[in-house]
Each structure stands twice: as C-alpha cells, then as structure tokens.
Image (cartoon, rainbow, N blue to C red):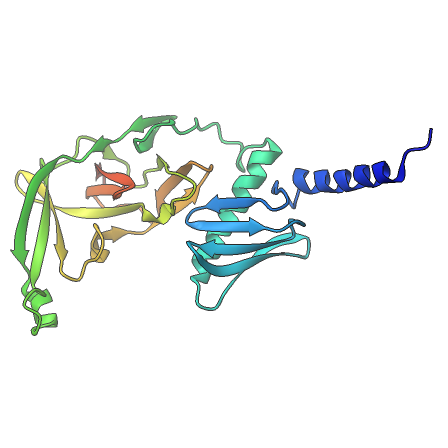
Amino acid sequence: MATPRFLRSFVGVGAITLALVLRCNGQTVKPNEVVKWDDYTFKFGPSTQMAQVLQGDKVVGSILMMNGSLQVIPLPDADGERLKKSFEDWKAFSARSHSGGSPAGGSAEPPCPADDVPHYLDGGAWKPMTVVVSAGREAGVSMKEGLKNPLNPNAGRTRIAMYKDAAAAITLRASPKFCIAIPANVNPEVIEIGAVDVKKDHRELELTHADKTWMPAKRLQAVDVKRISDTVVEVIPKEPLPSGQYVLGGPPTIGVYDFGGAAKAN
C-alpha cells in the first residue's frame, strides 16, 4: 500500500529533527532549547544552528554554526573572554555527557560528593572541608588607604574579619585540588581563594573602604575554575601556594572554608 504523501513528509521532518536532537557537533541541542550555564542563557532557534546569548535580560552575544562547529560571538560591550570560556566549558561538558566518555586521560578519580560542602582531593578520595569559625569583627584604620583619598573621611577605615585559631584544622599540599557543588545558573567565578594574616591566637582578613567584595584583591590567589558537570566545578590554584593560611569561598552562594598551605616539596 502506498504511503500517504503527508505521512512521508512527517517522517522526513521527524528524521531531520531527531538528527538535530541527537547530535550537534558533540552537543545535544533540541530545537528552541534554552540552556542556562553560569550566569548566561543560550536561547537556540528552531534549527539549533543559531542562538541568542543573554546575561540576565541583556543580549551579550550570538551563537552560530561556523565551519561545522558552534561558535560564540560576543557583542563589543560584553566581557568577551569570559563569555568564550563559559561557552567552551559548556560545549566540553555537553560533549562528555552525551558521548558516554570520561575526561581526557581516563582518570579514575572518584566523582565529587553530591552535597553542599566543598571537598579537597586527598590521595584518591574527596574529603570534606571545614567551615571557618569566626572570632568576631573589628574596625581598623589604614593610613595608606586614607592618604589615597584625604578628602574622604571614610577612606582610611577598615573592617577586620577574625577567624578562630592561628591555623586551620587541615593542611594541604602546595597545589591542592577542590571540587564544589554549584548550580548551573551560578557563575563559578564567584569562588575565590585568598591568603589571611596569622596572629598569635587567630587569623585576620582586613578589608578597606575600596574593597567591594569579601576578598581584597591583594589577597587573591589565581585559580583555574572548571565546570566538570552542570552542578560541580573543580578549583585548582594556577601556581603552587606559598606556605600559609587560606580561605576558600564565594559568599553568599558558597560559604567560607579554611585550610593551611604546606611548603612546596623540593
């Protein structure tokens, strides 16, 4: 019996749609799909070959199929490097997720525990970190900061966060590795590692009037933050940490956790 023309057309369109859903250069993308990644939203069209990129309600770029691969094109007033990195992280995660494979190298590293506590890698196991214990806060004065803006009476005022004990309960190697659960719609770059001052019986973190976040810029340690799934990121210092005391966090999404850094082995 002959197949009706409308049925043949329906089957043909369905096959094309299925092919688009199953694979788009390693990423599974459905027509008109909306992908939330970091603090970006990728709004794909019916063909899956084009998408609009939004950050909040603002359009910051486009995604186009070029030379057989999806590429992101930031708008001139967007943070292009950050958007490109986020998009490449999503492509890598999506390709791994739908290929059934593991990251390059076939690492036997165990999966990050699915809870709200950051973990550090110890040998072949992830171990939970401990929340830093507050020892109160104090007000201070910085003559250096005050002289930068002598007309502002608040310029020299500082806030000092104090943490209990002169050392954290755990001490890690100079190049530690962390895994942290974080929602897909939260930018993982909120996670930071910073050095703290060690006093006789406690540790301190001093913030000046110019500091707008929980961690002063001069205390920051450069880190690589890599999303390994839609809910987990890995954090690794770019350089071995000097011996000292540190905190890791990203308030308010991620709490503040402490650790000591051991000297690099010779």
